[in-house]
Image 1 (cartoon, rainbow, N blue to C red):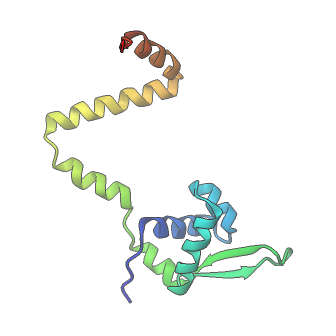
Image 2: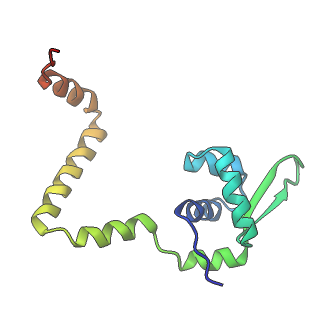
Length: 133
């Protein structure tokens, strides 16, 4: 059965796969989504027979999420959503533009890794001229 999933649904499935037997709150924390969002996504995935919910063995109030064999098979063939989209679009950009973008991204990583973000922000603020109204 071919099922069209949203990117959020695929991310939830991937997170459950990575964690194994996880709680909805663990998935919410890992994906930086609300508990309510994870509950809604899990409801839909359960309807599609892609995940199962069960009560915790030690704490019956706790709900555990696991993938079904169907979901595991589907994830084996699932593309890396963002990476594939970026690669496809990036290939359409002129080589000189690709080089400029890569240089800018490398600089951004350098700034973030060195903690120079605050210095860059203050430099930027120094160059902004106030507008008088």
